[in-house]
Image (cartoon, rainbow, N blue to C red; front, side, top):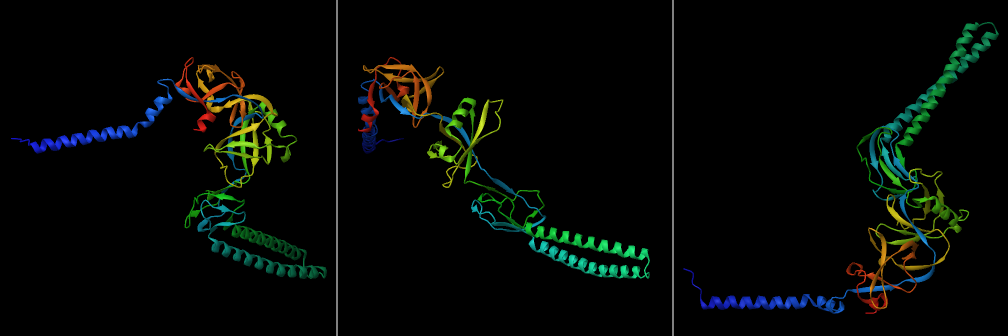
Length: 387
């Protein structure tokens, strides 16, 4: 039979009271923000942050999707057959043009070179002998001691000996070329990737890639523009001199924006009939390696001169099935949803062609909490920043 003592009851009661006290303590510690927010919400009134639309003199910029590509890249392939003796680079490192990267069975090809040199020396010695014999037969023929047939034989032997020397010289040249192929050097300066073949492996001529080198400085970004924008981009570059270019704002994959001035720019020689666009290639200095071949980036380019336009923060723009909109707050703090026609970007601001006027307040934080015609409690960005 289970016997519950008075001591056990008191112990359980004490534990229950301690748990309750801990719960009330944690509730008070974890919910002050909610209490403060309730005050900010004004008893159910949404709290939002606003900024003003401003008329400014800006230089609009078009937004293009660009693909970063190397101007030069090389797949290293063996030109001879043999075993890889040495791999002389660190994977992922920068290599200079002319650096030795691989060595392939060098001693065997050096031996073949020595054989070719010996064959040439032998052919040259034979030529000297045959030349002397021919000269002697010519003299004997003049004195009527040698027949024409004998002279013809000597002449043919001389021609064969000369041909043998040429063949031996060609074999020597090929042997020298093959010896040169035993060391594979970097044809360009750039970053080398993984060694696709390591020491001890057997390779055959031109059959496989040993490694790949990619030039990263300078580098190129290619993007497609329509015919109208292409005319503006080309006019923006003047006569194509570097001094005529203006800086491009490039948004990297991590969201960071950098400004770079193109070193050169050229367009493809025809329009893509499927997309009605033309490819434009911009070359940039990339000493800091911020641009990586293969990446996709956003390229913001000025396509016209400065203009007066109304600009708002990009955070103020909402989208739904009907298009772009903003929430404008009147003097009575009532929200009005406005459809807007957007222009180009101007730095970190968005140009608005229609829908918002200079000086009007637009919501930049809290768009999802409000509805058209609703009253809100609003603070400006400046006021919020001073809190």
